[in-house]
Image 1 (cartoon, rainbow, N blue to C red):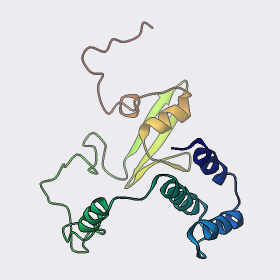
Image 2: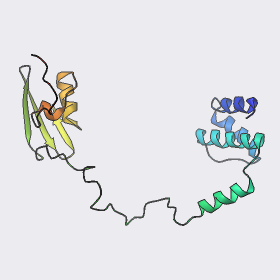
Image 3: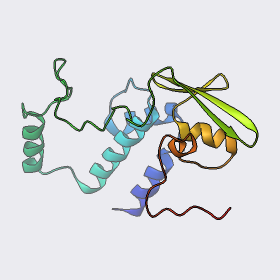
Image 4: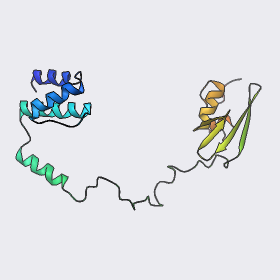
Length: 165
């Protein structure tokens, strides 16, 4: 592509929306209603490339139209669609190592008792909600921990050696 076209496309990013709308009118010969900057930049850049190198061939244009009109293509998931019960059960399911909702976990760390309540959608520690036990362990200790390991809900895996104490 011509170096001048590259430079002009780079300049589009620095233009205001008003300037882009004016440039759009110059390039397309019509006004535009949108004020979405990135959309304007992309459309003008595309048009500048077309003017410099030419448009799609008629064959390519017809193929694109055929693909766009394919009834098998969906733009939205049907309202009555739902996931099959045989789909991956691990995704979105609760970790079996976690205790039931309402359980209170206690852990003494450096002479301080940490109290965590298990909620339906996370955990509560010191009046704040957390998405994971690891986040609470990190908050309390200042270092990264596996939250399940920190609160004694799982055992250290094989092959992991304990640091010398």
